[in-house]
Image 1 (cartoon, rainbow, N blue to C red):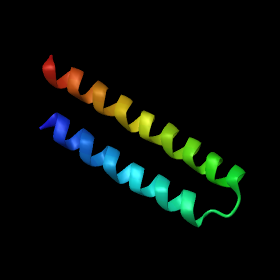
Image 2 (image 1 turned 30 degrees about the vertical axis):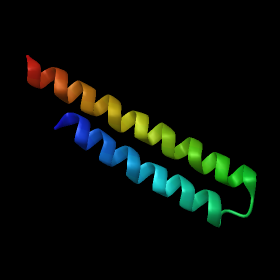
Image 3 (image 1 turned 135 degrees about the vertical axis):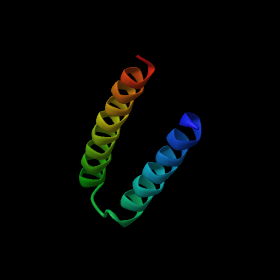
Length: 57
């Protein structure tokens, strides 16, 4: 179940990245957008890790 949820989220973020890359006319802006999205994804994954480790206790 964990793997499926993780893959689903990863797919959503990839779709967003592709969309911003295509729609963004400025390369710098799209890079900043991707960086921001990746940082927020890392934050979400860290929160999930903490939640899972708390559940296992």
